[in-house]
Length: 333
Image 1 (cartoon, one colour):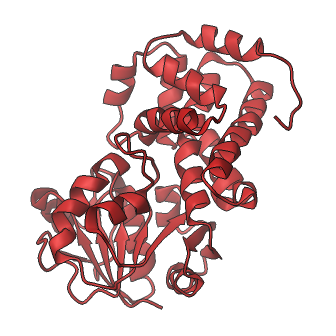
Image 2: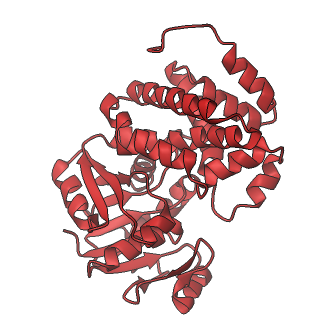
């Protein structure tokens, strides 16, 4: 297992990771881009901005100094929102210890370069550091409450995936290993777009039949995109595909689903975003998913419909009518 760990990021998932790892007696240090925010977390012993109501482990250390925060680490966790991932790692590149594995817990696809989180890190650091990802149906406050949960640790180097698996596994958090680093990240990013659609369904009161159909056809879209990017089909039937999609689309705590519900109730995009403290990843990821689908020749009508609603190009009713009137075809297509 890895014993000395630095977490890059101070959001909800970074906080949940710190709780999990400190519970195992590891030396854990949290870095944040804002020294003021990090000091506030340290002072109060609680992440009041992103994950209020949970006391942090007293053993958790804080370090906002770029030059020293990763010194001595044998594992680095990247927990930075996707659209900020590039700038953060460009900033930290001069201080990245050579050879130390980096595991991303970020879900998203960068808009400008259409890169997955580990690809962003590699592009910014020119990294020879091993890269991995940890993802699954993991709502941060449930992890803090130590409710049963599972995730998948993916890395092209299976020995590193297994070490990450062993490091994160606790009696309440079961981690599986996978070699499909692309598929795990595509699933984790794309499900946020479908979750916005699920929230819209809830907001307009379209019913459970509609929501079930949305999840099934949404998963088909995600799988098609992943396959076009070289991912394993089986990944999308697992924790990071179906599992994460279900949680994100049904949980009242999910930011993306809640954002979509507000849109369904008639709230403007700007108003719905303003009511959310954390980043609603599905909004920016939607543009990336649709752009990738176009680039790869993958049909993703639900994702395209969500984008049209967010951009104000179509109403919710118009998108639903468009989806329901599409040419009839085999379910395999």
